[in-house]
Image (cartoon, rainbow, N blue to C red):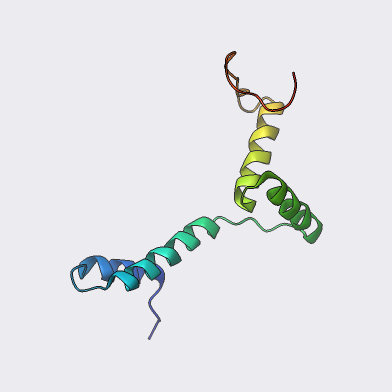
Amino acid sequence: MKTPDTADQLEDAANRIADISRSELQIMLRRAALLIRNGAAVSMEDNVEEVLRDLAGEFGKTRNDTIRLIVREWMEQNAYLPVHMLDEDGEVDGEA
């Protein structure tokens, strides 16, 4: 017999929503959020992982958000994506 995964548990909870406790539902939703957040993980070499952790901490972002940022900027700089333009009146960090 297979153990139910998070998706099975969420489907079961949806089918019996009136009977499930608030705390059980919170636990299932938190597990689902963690799976979604970490589900698209890309594995890297140890030295790259170390730099990603450092950058993520420096940027105040998650590891996956840092990877998204790096890939987007690389694609913009290499003309695979249009460059994100700032408004003339918009806020900027640093000096011009």
